[in-house]
Length: 169
Image 1: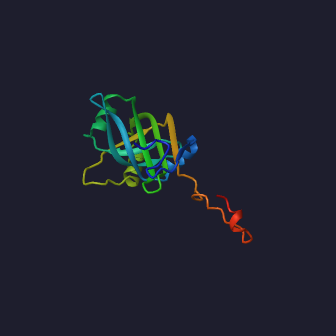
Image 2: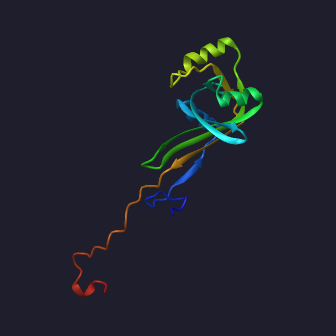
């Protein structure tokens, strides 16, 4: 088993906590993530694309018949999490951000039309519902790789004037 503070090649690695502003900036710079909600009292996760508004709201589109939409319509104050990351599997570096907050359907027709233009569906399914997540809790980490190591220490080099008898035994 690999210790959690080491990469699979044994090099040390660490995490650095991100502030809210940096976490939201990173989230806004990527197009997709995963929304986490409750389905039959168990966690459910769906990949979606998103837009982050200037005030921090995370906006996604979904289908009226989806489990996410059903959960939000059943409870207008349903708490969800939204996670996105960008991690390099080779270097074990990158970041991860989680936004937790209340999810609500967007009803204003002008806003819905705007999000329909901005959030294009990935599949042939009709995405007829826009949901916004108010970011109550924002957490994030940056995965920092191991510092460059100079390698093993070099063996001592005898001075050119050293005699055979002067070398350590």
